[in-house]
Image 1 (spheres, rainbow, N blue to C red):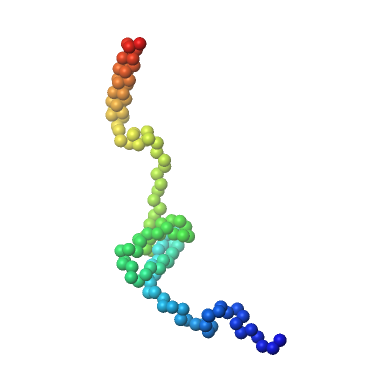
Image 2: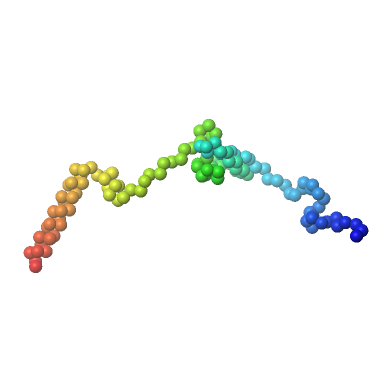
Length: 121
């Protein structure tokens, strides 16, 4: 057992240990985002990207809350409205007086139709 295996544990073609020349690193900018709980998330963007193309808000991977670029004023979670039925939306659009008028018109049309059907029979 003379000698040792010098390449054991090394990748073929990896070059000398500690080699720093693995290509040119692209210039980039670091942007921090904070959520309402104070969690910081860092995103990196290419240095070529215009400032207006960098998003103002992201979803925090830590909490799922929206995260903004202003540490002192993080965005608040928007309150979800509960499910509304069709009737709830109609009640928002109409006053009770308008609803009474529409109901009366519909009943008159129905009575007229039923009355004409009875006379034919």
